[in-house]
Every structure is written in C-alpha cells, then in structure tokens.
Amino acid sequence: MNPSDLSLDSSAQPLLEACDWSFPVPIAYGPGRLAELGEISRGMGIRNPMIVTDCGSRDLPFIAQATQSLMRAGLSSRVFGEISTNPGEADVARSVDAYRSGGHDAVIAIGGGSGMDGGKATALMAHHDLDLWQFDFEREIPTLPTGHVFPKLICVPSTAGTGAETESTAMVTHAERGMKLCVWHPDLKPSLALLDPEITLGLPSSLTAWTGIDAMVHAIEAYCVPNFHPMCDGAALQALELIGQWLPVVCDEPGDVRARGGMQVGACLAGVAFLKGLGLVHAMSHAVGAEYDTHHGLTNAVLLPAVLRFNAPAIAHKIPAMASALAIQATDFDSFYYWVCELLDKLDIPARLSDLGVPDYAVAGLAAKALSDTAAGTNPRALNVAAVEAVLLDAITIGR
Image (cartoon, rainbow, N blue to C red; front, side):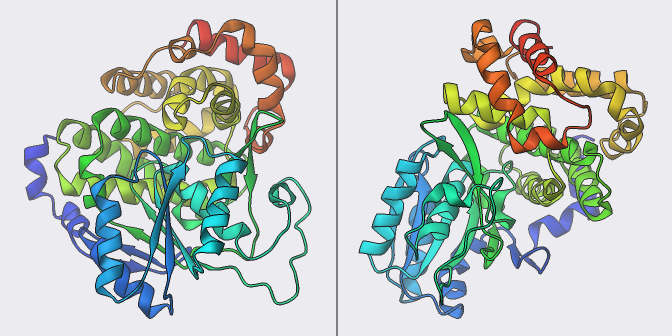
C-alpha cells in the first residue's frame, strides 16, 4: 500500500484518536496524551513523582513536556536521567537513592527499554532494603517487609519496540556474572501505560528501525513458543499485522503519526504476547548486550535470521499464520524467511554479529550465558551448548 493511499483507509483513522483500554493494565493511547500526565498523576493521588529515564533521553523534548505537565497539575517532580543503555545494578542503586532522598511517592518511567527498565527496577526497590538479585525471576519470590507497598508506577515508552510498558519486569545487568537478569515481583504492576505516538516522531531513522524490528522479534518468538496460550498468540498475530503494515511506512514517512501510532500499539501487543515466553534470539541478545553493550533491538535484528534457520523444523506449522498476518502471499518457511531478510536489508540492518564488534572467539562464553537465560527455556527447538555455539558462530560469520 502506498503511504499516500492511507488517508482512504478507515482502519487507520482510530490511530489518530484517544482511546483508553484496561487490558492487561490500564492503557491511555493517543497522539498528544503526554500532556495529560500531570492530571492523570494527580487523579491517582500522586504528589511528588520521580521521572526516571536513560542518558540518551534526559535532554529530549518529551522529558521537558512531562515535567511541564506535572507542574501545570501542581505537582513537584525531579528527573533522574542517569540510566545506562544497558542498565546495571549501580544505576538502580543511584536511582533508588535519588528517589528516597527526594521524598518521592511514585515513579514515572519514560524512555526506551533501558529507561523503563531503570524506572521499573527503581519502583521495585524503593521501599525496602532487600538485595536486588533476590528478585531474580529464576529465584523464589522474596518475602517483603510487613506492610510493604510498592510505589505507583507509570510507564511511558518513547520508542515503538520494547513493549515493556505493561509489565513490571526489568532487565538489569549483573556486573559480576556479566549477564542480564530479569528482576520482578508479581505484586508490582504499572498503574498506567501511556502511549503517545507523538513522542516517537523525533526518533532517528536507525532507532525507528531497530526498535521496530525488536517488536517484530517479540511477536515472532512469542508466537513460536510451544506453550498453549491463545490470548498471547492472538496478541502476537495482531502485533505482526500492525508491524507488517506500519513499519515500512514509518521508515519511509517518519512524520506519519498514524504509522507511529500503529507501531506503538503493535509493540505494546508484542510485549503482552511475550508473557508467554521468548526464545533463542533474546537469550543470545541478552548475553551479547551484557558483554558488548550493543543496542538490544539491533542485536535482536542481526540474530533473527540465524535463529529462524535453526528453529525452522520446529516452527513450520507456525509459519502460515505469521505469513498471513504479515500479508505474505506464500505460506512456506522459505518465503517467510526471505521476506524477513528483505525487510532487514531495507532497514539497513547489519548482516552479521561481527559487524557489531562480536568476535568468533567469544562464542563459547556467550553460548554458556545464553543457555542459562530464561528465554532459552521457551525456545521452540531444544537447545544444548553445541547447538547454541553453532547458531552464534553462524550469526557472527554468515548472518543472512
């Protein structure tokens, strides 16, 4: 479809309108809705929130817009903008110190995956003195102090990719282990996810592409997880339909608010879908990101072809539905695979992991870490060290 024809498509019109949804958490969607942040916060009883964001976002216009909205509503606030691209435990500790010293009563996590991870981890740790790693997803849920209450948490994505705004799980790098770990508590849920596609209008073309493919990978990996979860499968397929329609448009026409909105909703749905689980792309990407500080979405994009080739025997029956969602006429694996590769070419995604600075001698160490990652456990094809090493070497030397 030519972008100029989209004005005739009535299905695109709702992407320009404000909508409120209640699943899986309260969601406020619509262009310009960041301006409502202050009134929304005041309605929740918030009086002194701390905005947590990443180093790359702290000086961008939407942070000032958020602060101004809070001020207009009569709320005091401060910005903590020291979260790294791949947040570590030291980032979280500094953010928690700032939260406590400022007497804050809520966290507003704004940014891409790193900013929201930092904000969510801050909310997780703000009101107790337990160790961060006690909240590792792989460990038994820790007992919180009597009377403990998590602070209100509002998540505002500044990209259309991470899909992290509807859950409180946060990826944090464990410095000693050199791994990204998922920290969480089931009682911490976002009080609101605010999706404003206008925030993403200034996103550089590279980040638009990288985060867009990140969302697509979320949907593909979640749908291919063998567990029976029709709700997540439905979200994954709807996400693919939106991403397949709008990602090419938003990359060609970055000022199209409908395309930006379609991608934000698609990314959010893909984030809901991966409650079902993920797979080897994410298991390896977490290891690579922790070791080489690479951008998560870009790393996912580079790894995707090699993982698709490896998983092909186990996902053949999943291809027709995904191909249909992406409007691919043929429904065999090869047609699906080549469509993905052509899209990566169009978006100027590097072909090999070596292009991101990952050497072949790192394979053994990265494979061991990837195999212990939570996402490896839901990969559709069984994994062992030799298999993961082979896929990593393939991604480093051949790519796509």
